[in-house]
Length: 358
Image (cartoon, rainbow, N blue to C red; front, side):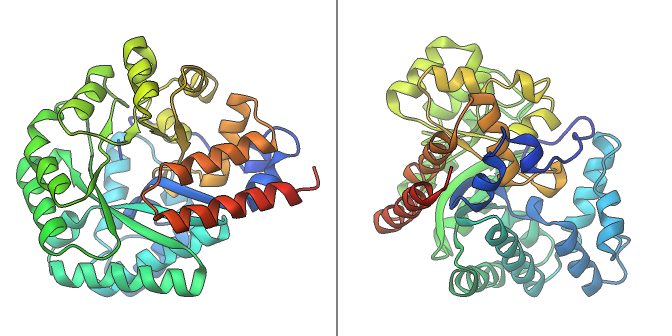
């Protein structure tokens, strides 16, 4: 997650954002999401449940009040609100509740598979034992698949602003305590002031342990950060990567080597990485042959969800239903889901398109 420097735009429904007739198609479309954060997915409904568990917290316990609570005045206020939510996660049961309820919100959007970016260091540093953390997310993952039909996998994310000690602790947990659902290793937080190359030893260890490399890069900084993620961190996918549009050589490299960008349109506007949705470089990336996936990043905090992000992408790219379905299949194809799972979800998308009356 890159943090916003100003309040995000008001939320829009997928019906309002999508070209005529596509809102309903997008809402029912089976989808995969590859770039979405664990705590950042805590909706007002989930936060209210957590706040009710901890009545000493200043966080409102009424979901209606929480809608207003999640309206950010400025950067400092965003940090204040985000940390107040983090402070609600105090024990393994909180972790389990958060994770399962995030999956419940995904199920409502017909998200079948998600790679959820989890930052274990934040919880462990606050006193939750590392093994208890792993057991909680795994218990929620198995219940979500069994009861909600949502398949979850984990990306363990290092918060860049906490530096190399946090990276060392995160890769230790990833490699030594490795939960069954863990598939990748990431790097989030601020880019400015936190270059990618110093994190290379930790990515090397994660890759040697069989994890995939999926760092954030090139959202709030320039193309060089993306190059560094590719050359130093051996990135297989890039989180955000919107600044690649400014470097034709980088675009050609991404296209030639099939390295996808995890694009999050509303988040990119909220962080001021791009000036507006109308000016988002998504069409330029696609025109250059770069594989893109559409994602929501920190959806409640940016007033969005995955359906709305698909609607924005459909408008920016001029897609019809078949084009939106292809975009959904992109995410499945470049995910770290097993081959059988990919085949099932791709077939479900094709079947949904074939049955669509439009």
